[in-house]
Length: 66
Image (cartoon, rainbow, N blue to C red; front, top):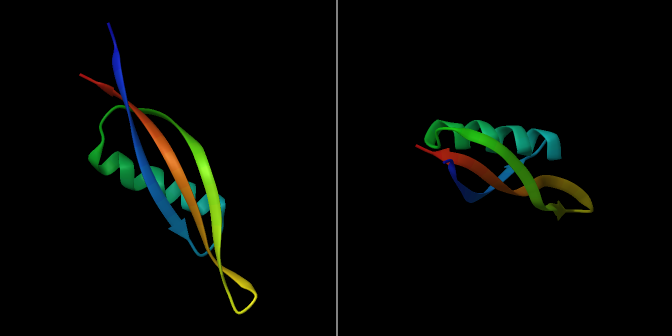
């Protein structure tokens, strides 16, 4: 029997959503072992002076418990 857990994390990047996702997964795998998948639950941007300055994603990361 396999048991999995979902952990929610928020990651950000000044480059774009793809970079925010990649950095979030990279950081999650430093702490969580057995990461199997992730889905983007939410996206948002931070705007200053009429320009997008930060991209944020809320990820739900699934990992297998051993």
